[in-house]
Length: 522
Image 1 (cartoon, rainbow, N blue to C red):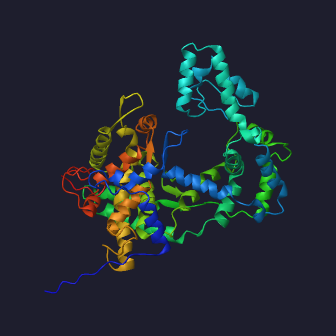
Image 2: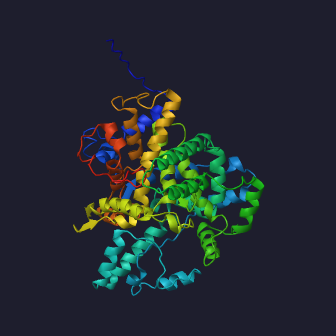
Image 3: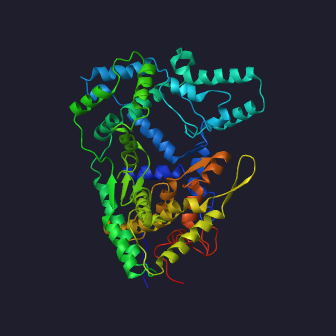
């Protein structure tokens, strides 16, 4: 018998080298992926990206969002509209005199005997009630409030308030008091709050490499086909239920990027000439008058465009939307496994939201026939229990249990997205290279198979870490901590266990796996 061996080719295209660099800078090879896959996939990234002192967590989404902001912060307005000088002058005023006041507070009732917030906001034309939520505070606010509650001297309270006001207003002071974030904060307000439509238009026309998203549209259709195949294989659904769900899938619209007409320069100029206070003498005056005009009114007509720069995705009833901000970092200039593990997974996740635990509350009417609803609830409960068995210690050492019931729409969507994106990836691999298995290796990562690179790329999206307080809070939210999401989804994936050849009952390959769709009767 003649045994023929060949060495798989190492892909050295720009997309492959970019993907390899991202993964190499994230992977911790000292950890066995079958013991702790999240640490294996993200350990190095976490160690090299400490949490900033003003945040309770830091992750790849924040990193990408910062990179996106840097892109449009460096836009040269004059290159697009050199005749729009008055707009440019206002932005320059922002740089020259960036005075701003920001108040962050949590639970105003705890503070109202120390500071009259209602009177403060009333003075700038904003009315707040006893149940108005302003924002989420940092740990320092809690400690400061506790000091006041414990009877701290009024001198301390006064000094602390002066110090806080100084920090918030330092941008209007002399250069030696100004931090590196001065221009960033000011420019971010102008581009995101005051002029999001302008920012989105410029970003789409001048930064995106492929504003038509041809490759991304192909991934959408491949994901839809994989989703349909997976649903068709379910043997626990009544025919009437399956027919209803497949009909919903066909009606599901998924939007990529912007969903508005391409506004001309003239139309944009007329729009902002009408709404912005062009006669303001400094940025503080300009910003204050802008907020006074918005206070108490419906959101301005272009406020929705701000979401188009989010590094995130959204779903409602029978549609899902992947904004420009997310698509800008998931182009076809990456290896195939990275494209499907990141964008494909996100598309599959948003698609599954149409069929999550709120399936009959989204205007879809009665979906389940016979005993299907009871079986559906039983299968989702399996995932709920998995997350309820995950605990963390908060900053005081108290045990916090993850809220499995709260997060089930997200966690069941993760489970389905892993399977459908992997399935779509395998089919595209076969279409391009004639086989669904190994097709090539990435430089510096030759020890990993194509399937393994897919799962490493998927986990890379969720690399991040939390402070103890941030972790305890995330455990109670609809989106669980990143490690819980990735680890649990992988534990429920037979495809993952096969890819890494994890032994039965290894930490990442438990015998009991929870699945909702494509789950055989037992």
